[in-house]
Image (cartoon, rainbow, N blue to C red; front, side, top):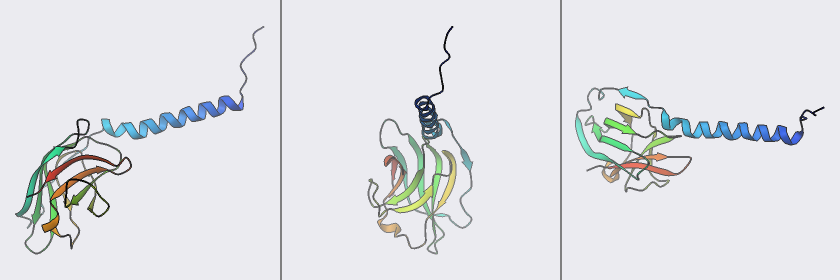
Length: 153
C-alpha cells in the first residue's frame, strides 16, 4: 500500500510563496507586452512651439522614439506635445521635465505615461520655469530606471 503525501504546513507555505512569486512576476512583466494608443489633437489655441526635441533611448533595453514639443497658448500656459511617440511599457512610467538629462527629485512631474504609442498632450503645471527645463524624461518610478530623454531646444 502506498501512502498518500500529506498536506503539511511546509508544503502550504511553499505553494503560497510560489503563487506570490508568479503574481509578482506577472505584475512586473506584463506591462512589457501591453501597448496602448492615443490620437489626440493639440489643444485649441496652443499653436506656438516654445521648445522641441527628438526622443532618444537611454539604453538598449528601453526604447523611446518620436518628437516632444512644448506648446504654449502665448498666455503662460504650456503642454508637452508628443508626436509619433512610442515607448517600451513598464510599471509606473512617468513623464518629467528636467534641467538636464538625468532624473532627480527636483524635476517637474507631469504624471503617468498616458499611452505607449501615438500623439497626445500632457499638461505642464502652471508656474513651471520653461526656460530652465531643457529635457523631457520618461522615468520608471519603482525601479528608478531612465527609459529615455528628449533634449528640448
